[in-house]
Length: 257
Image 1 (cartoon, helix red, strand yellow):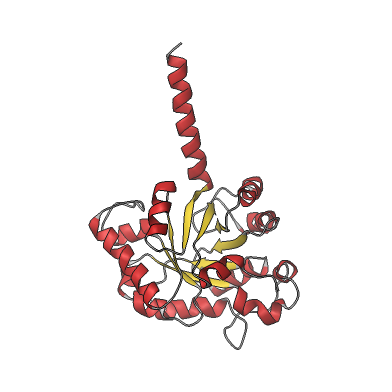
Image 2 (image 1 turned 180 degrees about the vertical axis):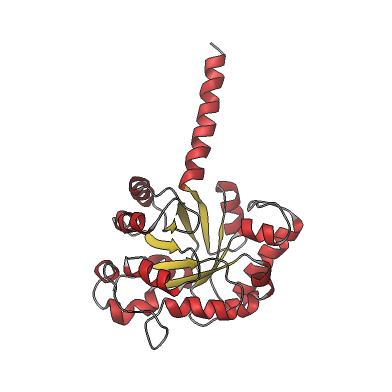
């Protein structure tokens, strides 16, 4: 079976950098995968994407060695089954509050006897290659998000869940859980402490830990802080950053004529 190269990096302690796809564009997905990201996440939870978009975007990502991952809308086995069957090599499950929910998420990504994933990888096996049924349990990554007050309280129990491939910090929702404005890139002391608590729990249990950022500055910071997988930014945010910067410069040039 095809190796999950992002998972291989995480397991060996190598840092990796990913991107986020929210616009539902096949062309943008293909462009970003050729940019050289280690992994790309198609966001079904908050993105302008649906399952039909996913069936087109995953093949576009598959034109390189970039690992395709999907953030599902919720911790629901039926949805997890479908995104894996269409070719995702990992899922990010949002709003995981406790160990029982983490156990359920892991179980949905693994075939029996290790889990309860139903068999029917209509494209997953084609993309994954020979021996998919026998090897998928070791190559499919289940990543849970710790981003709620309950999840933060139960972080040690969550990260010690057998079969968990990683934990992903949702910093904006984490800020809301702390009673703060929904800003992920922030130096607010309570937010810093919460992020460090999650990171330290993952390190203690030897579970890869990732986090979302809004750009290069915080990506550099998070890598220096020991995060194993860091999102540089999303398609919409990266586009607006470039447009805002260059448009302001162009308007300044026009005003000087």
